Picture (cartoon, rainbow, N blue to C red):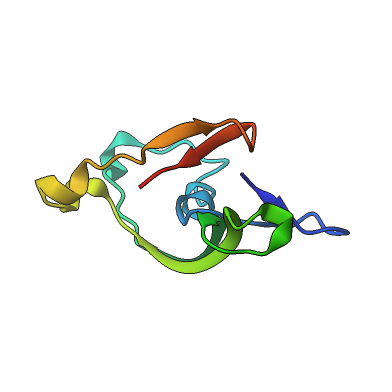
Amino acid sequence: MVYSIEGSDQCLISTAEIPVGGIHMDSILSASLLPLKYVAVSHCFRTEAGAAGTATRGLYRVHQFKLWTWASGDLGAPAYHKFDIEAWMPGLAQFGEVY
């Protein structure tokens, strides 16, 4: 989900990969330059489980956090392959992360 800022063409991002992906947006990269390695630090925003008041019945809120992103090839096996588990939540009419 992308959170748009009203009256602006800007949005709040949910992951650091978005701005990193734009670095070479209009470029054709030579194979001799690969692999490219980047690390990104970003303030990110996404919905998270937790108390947020009556409007969301305490299920979700927008959560700001810092994220450091790096190539997964540099991670060990336990950190390399992880999954978010989601379930259909009929009361919200959408999928949500379960723990």
